[in-house]
Length: 453
Ligand SMILES: [Cu+2]
Image 1 (tube, rainbow, N blue to C red):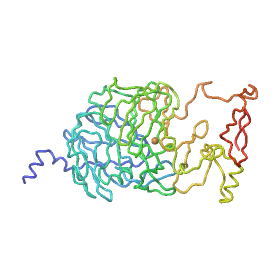
Image 2 (cartoon, rainbow, N blue to C red; image 1 turned 45 degrees about the vertical axis):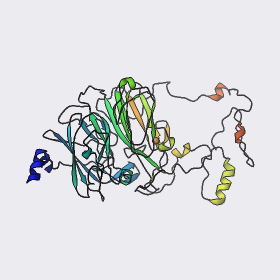
Image 3 (cartoon, protein in one colour; image 1 turned 30 degrees about the horizontal axis):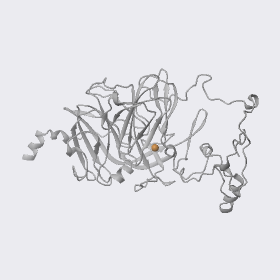
């Protein structure tokens, strides 16, 4: 009886009725979810994801996360068996407002114990979700509840602190956005969020190796790779925020073309405007969140990607020998002596792999892929496009298709035959570094173009 009355005083009897746990298993971006109750805010858009609906219970905003195995389409052609929340990985984005009281139910439908840690959120120690340290692990089949007051606005995330290496390597993570109480504080027109995660899949498999420490081969934004990552459609002149969290084991220098921007928010809070400086690439370290604000003032299809070029590739891209400049004839002879059916390739670079149809194991993505209006894009992994267009409707997030460049604004070919060969200094194009003993090197003609073999 004493226990019951204590529970009643703390308001915990309310927690007896567990709210519905919405489920969404598709990788199609859901439109932003305006709050049905409480303080208004400009909702975020989760690339290839969604926002978790809540219900009001007295003063509390109640959410329900279900930790469970999920099947995620990494890009068309590859499905992965992962773990996540409410039907997919990453889990749904949680959105609330500074000053809100939130009550988050967590049901464990994984085959092992779990917890949820609210990364960056200021809260009572016992709500911090570190299994063994601040709470018992949530056993299989059980539901725990977390309750805290959101003291400050900003960009946060959630992930387990229980068998962390396995559970994060299996995809357990989600974003947690706390909007400012004043809706005009740092207000933007469009607000995109995603988490970076990395996996090691052996070609042809659907289950990642969870004990991998270094050799990851699928680099994702919201568990998607190019060309499966949503584009970011924005209206010309929009103030745009992009919030990026990193739960991979390495840093990612994220680069946006055609614009400069500044970091406006980290997982520690808002960066004062006086402390911001212009950037075109920001390095996002492991366990870190960076949000940047940009005025989309240049129309076009602007590449937006990780600047580590091996992170804009898919599996099988990193055991390749560099054959650039090797004479095709010598190479073909050497290869055919050990593997008669293998084709020697790559002597002019590997770009041609973006347009080749190569036989691949089942459930394996090409190393680089994707087509634009001018040909193969030759990318994979952490790459997408910010599409800046005139006159998009405020909540229109449909892909507007390829950019129509105004006349005479696209790089074009010069008619060399008509223009005449330019002169070069003697010996140019015959680098001594290309001389290799015992090899009969094809020579570049001075001032000429060798062409494709
Ligand atoms: Cu990267």
